[in-house]
Image 1 (tube, helix red, strand yellow):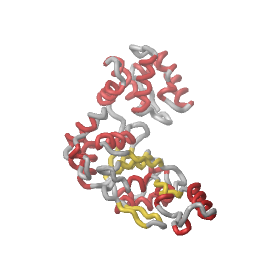
Image 2 (tube, rainbow, N blue to C red):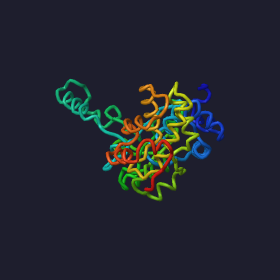
Image 3 (cartoon, rainbow, N blue to C red):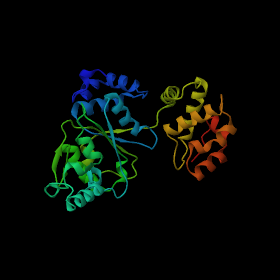
Image 4 (cartoon, one colour):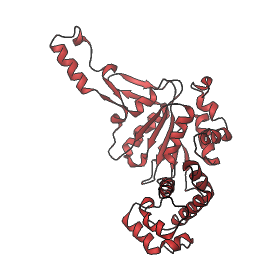
Amino acid sequence: MPKELNDQQTAKRLFESVESVQKAFARQDYIADRPLALTVMLAAQLNKPILLEGEAGVGKTDVAKVVARALNTELVRLQCYEGLDAQSTIYEWNYAKQILAIRMAEAGKHEGALEHTIFSEEFLLPRPLLRAIRHHSGGPATLLIDEVDRADEEFEAFLLEVLSEYQVTVPELGTFVATHPPFVVLTSNRTRELNDALKRRCLYLWIDYPPPSKEREIVVRKVPGISDQLAQQICDLMSTLRKIDFYKRPGVAETLDWARALMGMKVSQLEPTVLEETAGVLLKYKDDVERLSSIGGARLLSGDIPEN
């Protein structure tokens, strides 16, 4: 990246138009359609977070990774889960180091140690939100808040201040305000509805499964050496499978895994037996694998979709 772009204006300059976003993403082997490119451009220009919703495996998390690489900046990832509390996303104290400092002070091995508080930055362990806000290397960090729908509503409420003011508080040290507000991407698999207040602070985009033509281009980019014929067969089949009411439909991630598996097996053309034998690459639940077998590989490869 040119050195002159390595400042707080990097995102605005690099993502100044839909076309520039698409080119920046293409350099990272990510095919951004116009709605996604427009959302990224607006997020950069308005300094607002992006909320990406969609089925698992459609590339939501990859958007943040690509943004970080395009901006040549750090990707700070906060993986959400049930029971996640606010403090653990901001900071921890290095308890082992604190205890050692206390013992050394008590033993008189550190002159003046009693005057030196153990609640100082020397003993602070920044967690993802504080790391993103304190990021000082050139431009802003890219903050990925992944699967925010898995966290509790209390954590969502806490995020409102972070995403509005780009600041967090450590009671013993005070409030840290971002010099360069991070480029924020939130993802949700929609296991539950998010709070309206959180949504209002974000630019929203639903990412759907790609059409076969786009998915084929993804496969050709991501799986070197694959033939156009095999790539097309794979993507046509994936389109068929996603129209079936499986418990968990395969995403783009499974498409790429399967394409790589077929390449490793030296498969040049899809056959019913190959599909049935490798169903575990595409489907992750026993009932789904059994349903695929009951429908039959030949029927699926012909594009015949059974009634759900």
